[in-house]
Length: 320
Image 1 (cartoon, rainbow, N blue to C red):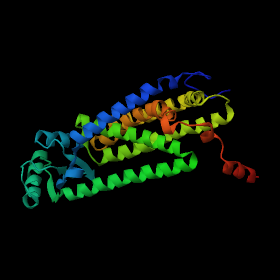
Image 2: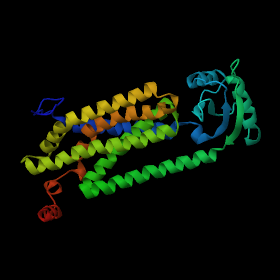
Image 3: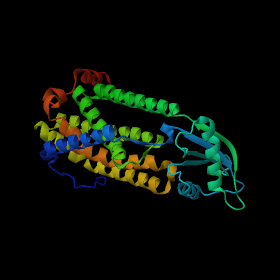
């Protein structure tokens, strides 16, 4: 009995027929995203810009969503709220409302305004601590995020270069960067708040994207060893054979992220949104970008690129 397959066995959808159009569309979307990032920029959250941090203790538990709504009504639309300790304690981070406030007075004034906004009859809340977090910390976080991005890209290229060929490594890296840029471009275009969870989501998209691409590349290599036909047919067959796995995996991941987006609360919304967009983009790019790139210019695969390497045969010969 054959395992469940979303598409009929032996499907032969001609994805390669659209390779020129799909690569051009991908390049256009990348250009739009880079333009949005360069000229419009991100709506950075307090993680990056700094702000006043206030710890408040309530005698009775409070609803975090209600707290956010109260702060929004008080003019702190970008407030970050999280519970800690017994659950009656809140950590609230907001941007001081008065322009020009500096560290010396912003924390105390803002703490008082926050406490007044959250005061409920019978459960007024007590300010335990208030501080001002400067933008320098946010700058350090941004720099660390860029280093993390570079580390992941270099790691991918080294890994794929060893596992496949340099052409595959370059194609996979370009596809992954395409996915990352599109997700980042979404936040720049829409002005959605860019916080640490969004950064974590973008890094997660890189892992998801490269995993999908490697599955297709693996099948391309296997097919070339077993099929006696041209490169386009080999690549096309690989996409068709992995299509069910790609779609099912992406669909399940999408549902998980959708549940997190709907029920995970405000603190995880950025992560879930980045992953939701990333799953869709990475799924499409593994089909319409990664494989087609192997048919163009210097990245075009040849028979020699896909032939088993001598060292592989030697390794197989040594196996018991």
